[in-house]
Length: 268
Image (cartoon, rainbow, N blue to C red; front, top):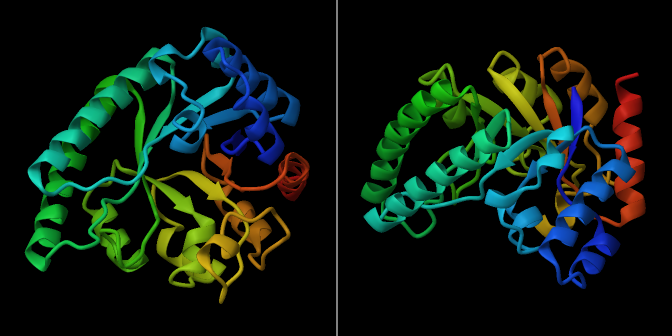
């Protein structure tokens, strides 16, 4: 397993917002990842949209890192949302191929405020989308993964529903969001392993979590600030080859550095 940077730290976030040049912002991201000691970079909306970075223009020197791309949540219905999703995916594969990324991960579709027939249509369309994307994935040599963020407002309301979907697409990878699965709907470490331990695991979104508090205070915590037995999960999933672990915490620069060291020590 290798670890990838997602969030850059509160102080670094404030600093990068003062940098007017996009090329210098790119260099700041690169220097930050090297300073922390990450082997990879996980490009997520919080890392590129917030800092006004054009992913079609990632500098070549970033290929020193192992790169992955993550797309945020989207709707598939109504039709114009599906078309928007399709365009976003096309761009994602272009970006990934150009920058020699090895995985594209997507979020389960949103279904909030949809009627029951619309939810059923969304699931049907998602099956079609995944089959189409897996063909593109095979053609480009880039794996495609689906995040395990399950809740009432997304397509899969539980890891059981998620697992049934995954089993119909054996080439589809799994990106486990540890913090969200632990927080909502409160899966234990053993249950996460039970549902997902024999799947096609590609990556982990790693952060600590606390239950029975507001979601903003209970997820994406620095390692050690919650109650997850992260070491148990890392030791189990470390058997998967080329697995990436994304440090997905919203914290100070110091906490990100310390959390990364804790994770590395868990595997020693």
